[in-house]
Image 1 (cartoon, helix red, strand yellow):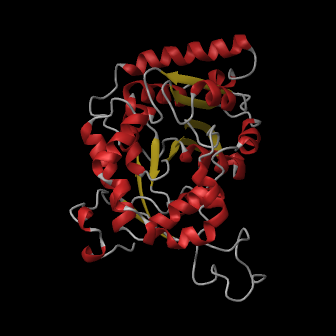
Image 2: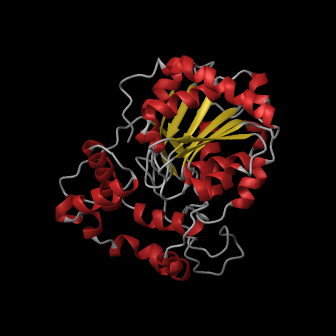
Image 3: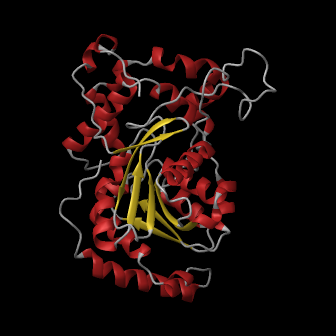
Length: 369
């Protein structure tokens, strides 16, 4: 993993230290991947996907909780371009993948380069599962925001390997397209390689960053804001390759209409749990959550009161017991997830009963990032 020297880091950010603890390291095709596998070897596997500019730390306490109280084996890892995983150079070939049919001098042909689209991250997940000896394991997927869309992409690519899906405010349905997105779409071939050189430090001044975060996540504690800020700054101004990788993700992931992906995955009979924050301003419940829920024939939508976009951080004591309850449902209760109202009510009652039982075990150390 490449980092800038101290003199190459803007003066205002030189005191920011690496905020990520090293876990285990996997050496895959596109470089090192930082991951943690927690829980009994015979436990059901839960694979967690964080969001854009996030890290595996989002699920750190979740993994402890699910493994301790549910006996699950929880895999958390940093996506490429995030945390302590490598940020490989961006594949700038206009085609989906560079090949011998490209013209000489194609900017994608020098070394291993990454597409940074949903299928790229789905393949990272598959490679990591193979690396740690879980190639044949059937897994449960748990994704937040961008991670929710990656979970869907993995499920469409490997449907037989996925038992259940939990998605917290998955991306792909942002109602408004910001003007800068059109600029990125038109000039991506210039902006992506230039990204490390045009970053403005004023955008990431701590006070301005804190105001922006609190506008989306009301009630977020000062320490949590500081942790989030230090991670953003370290990734963009200390670690190399992240700025270009982030722009590539913004350009190559469809943030505004992933309806086809969700429809394809939604036709599968596996159970799906969608979790939304009542105060989610990025993906509003009224216009987005109910639309997304409609794609799944065996899905349930749970709205968390007084939570924002990152409901996992805002209300962990409410979200995590619901997740554990869903994962622990007996087989007959999972099959009750279907269109018929009476069967939906049966599922809801089963989930409610289990939530009441596990809620009293909610640990006091839950502190999400």
